[in-house]
Amino acid sequence: MKMSDRSILTLDIGSSSCKAVVIDGSGREMASGSGEYPVYFAEGQTFAEQEPDEIWQGVCEAVGRALARYSGKGRIAAISLSSQISSHFLVGTDNRPLTRIITWMDSRANDQAERMKQSFTPEQLFFHLGAELPPGSSWPIPKLSWLSRYRPAEVELARYMVQPKEWVLWKMTGEWMTDLSSARGAVHQQTGEPADVLLAWAGVSRELIPPVGEPHQTAGTLTVEASELLGLARGLPVMLGWNDLNAAILGTVDWTRKGFGFDITGTSEHIGLLTRDSSGVLSPHHGINKIPFLQGYQTVYGVTSSGGHAFKWYAEQIACRGGKPGVAIDFGQIAEQAAAIEAGADGLIFLPYLNGERAPWWNPHARGVFFGLHFSHRRPHLARAVLEGVGFALRSILERLPYVPSVLVTAGGASKLGLWNQIKADILGVPVSRTQTTEAGCLGAAVLAAYGLGWYGSLEEAGTRMVRTGEEYTPRPQFKALYDESYGLFTELYLSLVELYQKSANRRDEGVS
Image 1 (cartoon, helix red, strand yellow):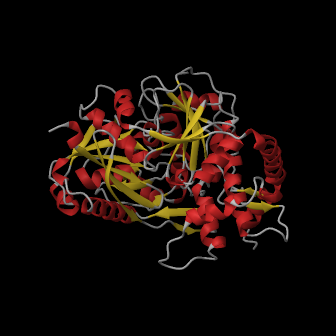
Image 2 (cartoon, helix red, strand yellow; image 1 turned 120 degrees about the horizontal axis):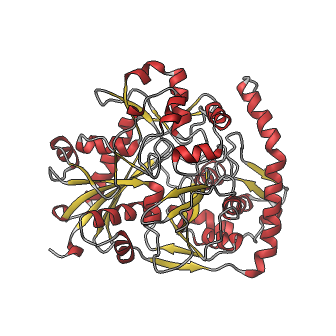
Image 3 (cartoon, helix red, strand yellow; image 1 turned 30 degrees about the vertical axis):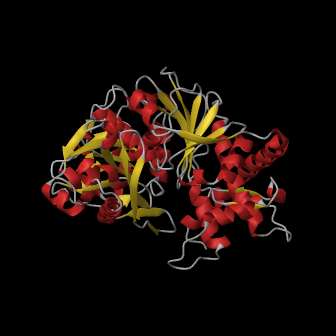
């Protein structure tokens, strides 16, 4: 059987849904499906949780819908996983969840993150973690510290602290395993050893960390129960896979172009670059992550917490005035309305920090703001301001990278919107190239599996053969001055609100409405 006749079932376990995509050995999408699951907010939006069993149900629905559209189940050679990270929960010795998933959107561990900053210098954290990771409430050590204080009984009973990918892997194979990059913040990124000093500071044992493997290795095979539930062959290899960011980067990498950068869209949005600079010297660029990637490469990046989520919020709550149950929102139509508004949105500025912000500010208390509203502004002005506001948030990350990439390859659902790609190119001053597939995480998972199965001799070869880019959007010089000025106002606006954000957070903590 030719390689192009074989296929891989890939899963991207996202923040609100799982996408299942069947991809052949040349990188072509053969069929896809999705399954949704909720996020539960509580405690004044501080808690953001999910149910592990609902994640698994969403995975099963996604697989079922994809396979219903694919006639070649017998040609599927493996399953490969990609998943959200910074979403943690405890499982007991019976392999059942002891807690809900504490998602990356959850900010309950803010105090623990602040104490971590006070307890360890950046140099010490780098020594223990082998990566530059500004402490935040989404990382595992602050969460473990919170659990030790407020859920000590569950910690005592716990076998492992895991994430959605590990959970789905166990449901499929009966094996527990994580990969090095997905375990960032708890495992040293060069040695693979648990960060004992930090785990002890959090009040837990290194035994809570599952075994660590390579993302392209076979982590297990499909059990009888899972094969019957999913409608796939018993014993089918399941690749360990990667976190969603790394998989998406692998699904966008253009190995033939120098100075490659990436813009991975989604609920949140990651922007950064690949570099072979592997020095252990801490970067002076505050608020940016530097993580080992593969084959001597490092990822240097930042993430804005409300990328596509900000536009989705606007579409649901303002453009469609709350929407109607069961009625799909036409995001393309909303973008067309925004396109009719001139660049700059007639002076309207939007801070997209609807649920705090990560890079570069790492401020969980930040909130969204429309600034400069006037009677003349209509909903399309607000839509344009939202698109531009996310662009400005990305620029605040881009300008802190070691260098400006020569091109940004964008993927994910928002990359379908040509207007947004053009706005980003204009604001960032960097060409933006769109991948032919929006499901870069699934494609990256397929690249891992194709290499792990021996179809290609290296990950670079697999990526070169399987990843394709499409339309490119170039910066338009006539908008540079306008967007430079608007970005300056955007930054000044955020900085002027920092103290008010803190006061507002204090009032919330005191129960003042």
